[in-house]
Every structure is written in C-alpha cells, then in structure tokens.
Length: 116
Length: 115
Image (cartoon, rainbow over all chains, first blue to last red):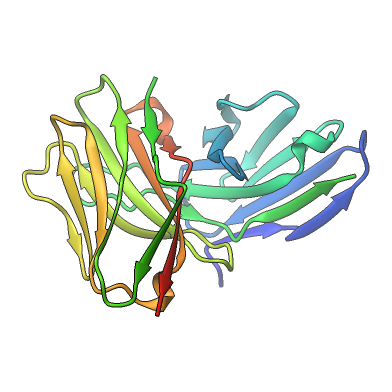
C-alpha cells in the first residue's frame, strides 16, 4: 500500500469549473501539504494542515481552498478553475521531528491538472 | 522569510565524473534543516540527503554528499561517480524550526549525465 495516494492522477477540466483533488495518507502523519510545481518556479506551497480542521495558507493560496476532516485525508479545491492553475500538484506529509535525521516530506505521485 | 536559490537551471556531466549542484539559502532563524530531493522524469520526489544547521560534519549518503558552508549560507550537493540514472531534476529545500514544518524549495537544477 502506497503511503500517500493522490487522486485523480490526471485531470482535464474547463475554465470556471470547480475541481477537487484528494490526498489520502496511511502514514498517520500530523502535517499535510499541497504544493504546485511549475517550470522555473520549483515547488510552491499552496496550503498546509497541522492537524484535523487546522489549516493555513501558503505562498500561492489565492483561488484555492482546503479541508481536512480526518487525519488521513486532505482535499484541495479550486473553486473556479483558471488556465493559470494548470500545473502539477503534489501532496506531501511529514511528522514532527526532534533532533537528528530529518527526512522532510513523504510525497505523493502528483496530479497533473490541465485547465482548458 | 526564507529563500532558496539554485542558480544553475541546467547542468551536464560525463558519466563517472563528479558534479556539484549549487544551493544558497537565506534565513534569520538559527535552527534549520537543508534537504536535497531528486525528481526523475517519472515525476516522483525522492529524498536524497539532509543537513541540520547545528550538524558539525557534512552529511553523506552513498554517492551523495552535502558541502555545507554555514558562513556562506551554501549547501551544495556533490554527486560522485555520476551514473546515467542520475539524470533528473534536483531540488534544494529548507525547513526552519517551527512554522508548520514547511519546506521552501529552490527552482531546481536539471542534470543530464552523458556517456
């Protein structure tokens, strides 16, 4: 069983349509994140969650909302998709670490979203 | 706010040679961690190596080592004995203590290993 599952893996949608991407984890990690990856920009944080019902904005949150009703699931919603939201979306999780080695994040496989 | 800078959009290296991928960072927080990830053409993100700001020695993981120069705020990745399978995008990232455990990424370096 994969630790993090993103669905769908690919989606084409029309401008103005609402879209929801799902991230499901079996790691029991407290923290969950949504990033978008675009050429020349690397990965940029959209929103993150530090617990059930606890979420906060990242650097590129405009046009996106999130919800986390269970530890395992973190949903990203584009209320009204625009062409500028065409991107690859990554979900990631992490557990709070103390001293010593830190593996950072566990990443999902990504969702390729195209808004036409 | 923290920032990661990767100034090499693309790099070429010959098979079996060593290559250094540059990364500089900016933060005022004294406690932070630096990471390198590899993203092959298949798209997954693979953790390579980690360096804590208080670590006295440079991190090493197999053929990967991190050249950590704290005073210069640089955390360059060195790949020794390059292999064709090392061709990928490489991202440097930083996490500061607290603040939601968030990673800030650089823009990446596309490495191509040639015969």
